[in-house]
Length: 100
Image 1 (cartoon, rainbow, N blue to C red):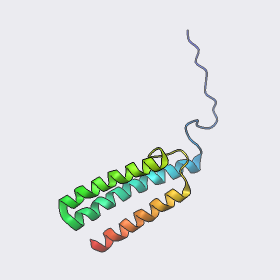
Image 2: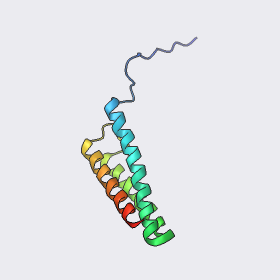
Image 3: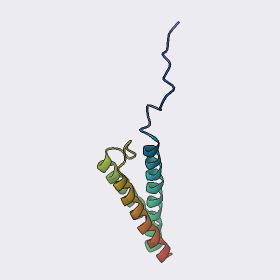
């Protein structure tokens, strides 16, 4: 018979805290939104080929984000990075709204 130690019933060992989890969730939502907005802007401006270029731009943006932070969704995301992502998503949304 094997013995498996029980985990302490305290905090989750994977999570860095509630604020960190909320920042990570917001970053995931904003990265997804910004990628879609970039694809939409490309599609509206240049049709199917522009949409394709928007997808390529979104992939490069996620790769750049990963190189900047070490992971796509790091455990401790700086608030400044989240604010920059929010600003970029807002600009893309405004631009998509103006040209649509």
